[in-house]
Length: 260
Image (spheres, rainbow, N blue to C red):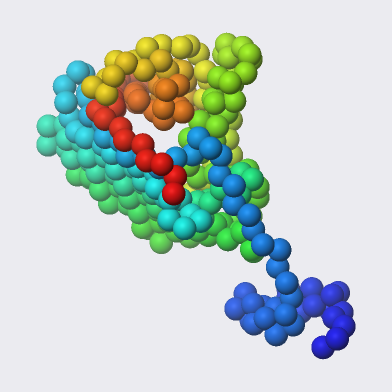
């Protein structure tokens, strides 16, 4: 086929399934522009462990890690806590790539506790520009995918990026707000943090000069302390509901690895 009618091709592509469209592109030998991945220099693999406290009593443990495999990254968070007869386990995983910005690929969130078991999965299709998701209760959704969208876990990488920019500049951070578009059970919601102070946080891994950020929504409050020395990896996280502490996670140790 020496000449291609691109208007006709676009019409045909809209009428075809993704698999058939891939086959058509192969037949016509249409070239795709190569994707160049350039992650920022601060984005490095690491492994961290935390202790969970409630009312100053140890109630559990948590881990968080970031690793690279090929062109993709995996951010993994795990926690297990027990208060009296109540046990709660949570696993959260984000797979993404970093082009000129963060591109989520998949998101996984599992809750197992004394009252319920719940699993949420989301898949980000950048070719078709859609997000597909489902939950344990068979609730499923499909919504448009746009640049700038992140998931409930990896948006903290975008937060780290902005904190690094502020720290490297002469900007005043007083009461600065950071907002992100987050996928949330079939909708896109705004998640905001207010930078309120600089504090030194003491942990088993050492003392860290940190930015203190607060997020409030209804009766819930989350406070993050993100360490300058660690390119703003969180060293302490506090959760509150109805004015009562739900748990505080404090860093035990952290190991960073060179990017291969």
